[in-house]
Each structure stands twice: as C-alpha cells, then as structure tokens.
Length: 327
Image (cartoon, rainbow, N blue to C red; front, side, top):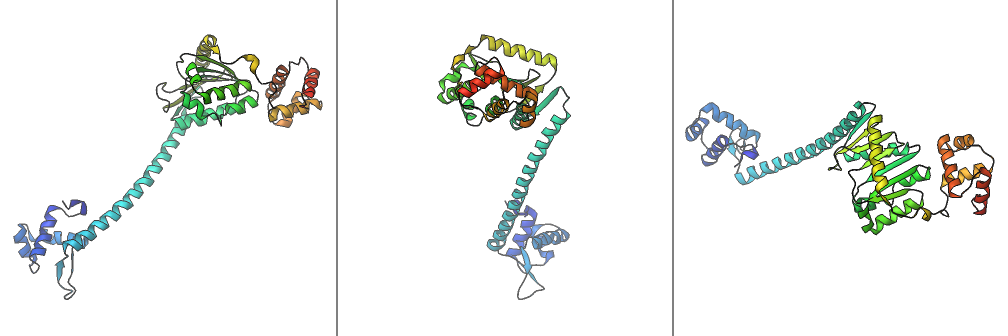
C-alpha cells in the first residue's frame, strides 16, 4: 500500500518493527522480521533517506522511527510535490513533441518531389493552400462539398475576396444543401456579386482545388478532413482533376442569375488605381510596375473592368468610368 511513497513491503516491515520495539538493535530487528542483519541495515538506510528514521533529539547518537502520521504524511506531500514537478516536465515535453511533429511535417513536405507535396494535418494543408492562393495568376476552381456550417465559418474572412480583388477568375461548385443556410447563401451571393461563378449539384465526390489549371489540390483522405492534403503538379493528374471539375461544373445549375452581378458595386482598391493610371495615359506595363503586380494581372483587371462596363476600347472604358464618377 505504501509503495507509491517509496516504502515496499520489506522496508515497511523494518519500519513497523522499529515503531513497535524502539529500543531494539539491528540484530533484534532482523530476528523480528526474519531477514539478515545486512538487509536490516539496508532497509534502515532507505528509511533514513525517506526521513522515517531520524536522530533522537535527546540523544543524537541514537535513532527512532518517526510517528506514521507525521512521517508518512510528510512523505506523501513530498511525493505529491515531486509528481507535480514531473507533470510539469511532462507538459513541457508534450509541447516540445508537438513542435517536433510540426517540424517533421514540414520536413516531409520539403522532401516531397517537385510534382507532389504531401501535407499532413489540417493546419499544414490550410497554410500551404493559402500560400498557393496568394500566388494564383489566372484561375481558381473549387469543388466544395463542405458542410453548411463550414461554409458559414469563413464568410467573414474568406481569402476568396482577396483573389477576386486581384482579378482571379473563381469558379466554385457547392452542394445544393447549402441553400438551407441563410448565412451560406449570403456569403455565396456576395462572392457572386464580386465576380465569382457559382453552381451547385446534389453531390460532390471530394474537395478539389485547381490553381491556374496547373496545380490540383486533393484531400489525403476524402473521409477525413483533418488528415491533410496532397498537391499535384503532374500534368496527367492535373488533367484528370480538370476533367473531374468540368464534369461536375457542366452538370451543375447556376445558383444566381449572371446578370445579377453588382456592376455598381464600389471598385476594389486595385481597380480604382488601375482606372486612375489608365485615365492618366499609363500603359499596362507602367500600371503593373507602379502597382507592384504582374503584367498579366494588370491586363486582367483592365479586361474585367471593360467587361463590367461593356467597353470595347480603352477610350470607351474611360468614358464609361467617368459617367459613373469612378475617375
């Protein structure tokens, strides 16, 4: 019963004998507990280390066994303090293990081939997908078999808004069940007004992201959203992913009327600055350099503005923008 305190059965037997026969010699204790004198001396050393056998105040050359209520209670408190210290060290070790695991995940990614990246865990996958979204140049296509609450969770801070602001063409296929959520519909409607093309189907096979028709991002395990993701750059795999997206896109139904896009919505900062520079006679190359964007992005923003204002030329674009008070 006392082993958690460091007192095994044999040591307790010597302790109990010393309590019951305080004036006994080690030889007499050995007879009482039926063991050798050498063993008794060993057990007494253990009791001294546990402060259960201490010098007698009135006679420092003599020793006595400490009363159990005092000795064992003190020993239990010491043991509790030690266990708390060990628990603290264990928590620190667990935190360190988590850091090491994260570093290992990053190492796994770093060791991946140029055509395939394996991202274990939702955090690693989300972080890498955000990086790829920031680097998108032209298009970002999505099959999103997300639950309604997951769609609603990202409504306020979706990175999709930033991509649309940069002129990236986004096409998304949702599940038709998202229509049951008012918040999800409001989010999708806002995306649509900003230029996102949205369709819905009754079912979707898995989550799929395609960046610039060059990168396909798929779940490591379609049945486990937290498992991570696999990023493919192999042309054959990307082609299959595009074919899968096209199949569901073609059978999907438009969630919103294409004519409902908000052409009177405020310009994004990039759009406003592009219009200002174009009105001042800047060429696409100058616009790209001054805004710190690629030439393709500058031209895409200009093309989107032309489509939005139904302008066939730079001149018509300038006139239409002036009529709206945008320049």
